[in-house]
Length: 387
Ligand SMILES: Nc1ncnc2c1ncn2[C@@H]1O[C@H](COP(=O)(O)OP(=O)(O)OP(=O)(O)O)[C@@H](O)[C@H]1O
Ligand SMILES: [Mg+2]
Image (cartoon, rainbow, N blue to C red; front, side, top):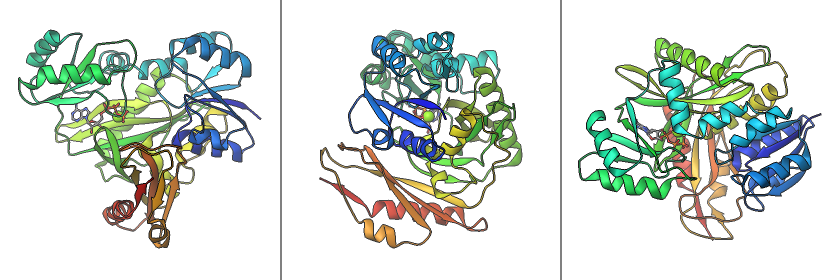
C-alpha cells in the first residue's frame, strides 16, 4: 500500500483521503492550520506553510512518501521539480502543479503552444500597462492576479474609471511575490462547465459527463451533472482537455474549465486535481466519484469506464460570520428531504462566505436536472450557520 502526502487538507482533500483510506493507503495530511478537514481522517498531520521551500523540503524528507499529492495551488511548486528529480512521484506531475499555479504559464501553454481557443488576453505589471492592455483588449474585460484563486483580486472593467480600481484590487488579492495581472476579454458565455478528465498510466484518457456551475464572488454556488450541451461542443472540450492534460503530463483527475457561447467553446483554466464543482459526484452520479477516480488513476489501478448512474446537483453551505464554534441550524429539514445528502466539512472556524458544507441532490437518469438543481439550492438556503 502507498504512503501519500497530501499538500492541502480542505474539504476536497478530506474526501480524497477517505477514498484512499478505503483502499488501505497511509495518509499524511498537510495544511497551514490545525484541525483542517483532511487531518481529521488522516493517519498523520503536518502543519506548515507550503509556500516555504525549507518547510516543504523537511516534510518530504521526513516522510519519504510514495506520492506527493497537491490539493491546493499555494505551494512552492518550483520545489516539486526537485522532488521528481530525487525520484518522488508528484501528482499528476511537477509541471502540472507548477504551470497551473501561475495563470501566465498555463495560459501561454494553452493559447500559444497548443493553440486552444481562449479569451483574447494581455499581461500588465503596472496600472499604466493595464491601461494600455485594456485599450487593445477592449471593454468589458476581466483582470486577475497571475497568482490567485477563488476569484481573489479579480474584477471586471466596464469603463475607463474602473482601470485604476481593478489594478489596486488585484494587488490586494495577489498571492505570492508577483504583481503582474492578466487582462482577458469578457466572454459573454451562455454557460460554463467543468470537464473532469482522467489521465491514466495505461494511456486511456477518460471524461466524466460535463458539470455545469454558477459562480458568484469567485466561488461556485451550485453545480449540476450532466450539463446539457451540444455534442459538437462537448467533443471540442474533450479534445482540448486531452491536449492540455497530455502536455502537462502525469496521471490523475483534472478539472478543465470551459466557457460555451454562440461562437463556440473557450478554454479557461484547469486544476490538476479534483475540482470543487465536482463535489456533485458525491451524490453518486457516477460509478466512481471524482476523489475515487483521482486515487485510482494515481495508484495505477486501471479505470475501465466512467458511467453516469444518476443525475445530480450540489449547492454550497456558506458561513455568514466569524466564529470559532460554527453551528448548523436546519439540518433536520435537510435530512428529511428525499434523494438528498450533505457533507459538513468540520472546519474549526468560520468567516463570512467560507464554504462549510455542501448539499447534494440526485434523481434517476430520466429526471429533470433543473428541478434537481433548484432543490439543492433551496435546501442549502434552509441551513443557517451560526456560532
Ligand atoms: N474572461 C472571462 N469572461 C467572462 N467570465 C469570466 C472570465 N474569466 C473568468 N470569468 C468568470 O469568473 C470565474 C472565475 O474565474 P477563474 O476560474 O479564472 O478564476 P479563479 O480565481 O481561478 O477561480 P477558481 O480558483 O475558483 O477556479 C469563472 O468561472 C467565470 O465565471
Ligand atoms: Mg476557475
